[in-house]
Length: 260
Ligand code: BGC
Image 1 (spheres, rainbow, N blue to C red):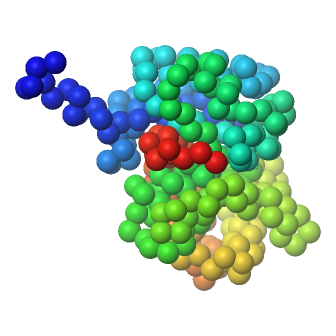
Image 2: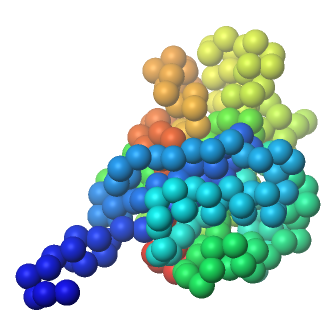
Image 3: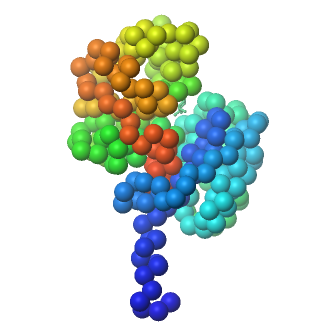
């Protein structure tokens, strides 16, 4: 490389993120300064059954699509602690007990890898580059989808694996009352569903006293239809990064050397 070649400096602040969900495995190269994808987002269908070996193969396919050889951050819809997958919602139950670092080292070879919960990754990305970027204090991101995912950050510092969707609120788990799947399954209006979300958020705000809730998941794209109907004291704003939040957060995690 000659001294005038700047290619190394233009690519140093990029990392790769992969977001594994029940239906798709999405990935892309992330500019860590802006929190934006560099180029396209590539998605394949999650293999069924979504066993560790099959999903690891899918992750490799997405990484190889970009000819990416650097660090890779990966999200899973699971609690991951002490380098072990502890729960498996919307993914094959055989993930429980697996060391995802050992699995991915075998599949992706020798490189830096971070594995974290999908909502935690989305929370990191939204807090730094999205709806939480100008907020100090306690930020709680919730993803409303098949379940309810959660991330808690205090001044940008993630407290991993909070799983607020599984908190008992009244007689049921929160995600059994107020996920967006429940809205669809029960054919609830936005008004009816917002009442349920208010009840769940009220339990969270009484426990945590957050400064901001960020509402993510696909239904956040229709935020104007339901966020104004919420009755909570804490401000609620829609997520901004949409379906790249998990990818961006995964790339941030591996760059930070996060290991949960
Ligand atoms: C899981 C969480 C996950 C969320 C969103 C919940 O059912 O328990 O770990 O973050 O769904 O995928």
